[in-house]
Length: 207
Image (cartoon, rainbow, N blue to C red):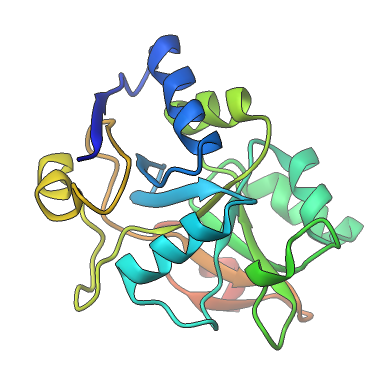
C-alpha cells in the first residue's frame, strides 16, 4: 500500500519533504502536484521505477518523459540550449511549459526518444516541487498523471489512492493544482513549434 502525505501547498513540511526524497532515492514511484496537474515521478537513475510508470500509463518507447528541474542552471546540465533558447526559457520559467530539447550526454539513453535523442524539460511554479527538487538535488523523471483511456489528468488525491494504491509508493495530497497538462514546445527546430496546447499561453508559438 502507498504512503499518503498531506503536504501544505504554500509551506511544505520539511519532515514530509525529506521522507518523500528518501522514497525517491530508494527507487520509489510517487504521485505529486505541479503547477499544471498531478504527475507520476521517480529518480532519474531508477530504471525499474521508470518501467513501473510506463506500465501504469501503458506508454510505449516513443513517449517523451520529462525532467522536472528546479531552475535554468539545472536544465543546462541535461539539455543543449543556445542563447536564444535560454532567453525564451528564462521568460517562461517557472511555469506550466514543457520544452523538448536535444539531450546532453548526462541523460541516460533509455530516457530519450529513440529517434530524436531529445528530452522534455520543465521548471514548475509550485512550492512542493521546489522543496522536493531542492532536497533531492537532481531532477525528477516525470509524466502527467493521465491514466489509459482518460483525456484529463487525475485531480483528486483520494481517487488516486483508490485507483493506484498498490502501484505506487507514495501519494502526495498537495491540494487542487489544476487539470490541464503543460503546453509542450519543440525546441529542436527553428522556429520552435507547438506540440501540445495546455495550461501555458501558447500564442507566441502559433504566429
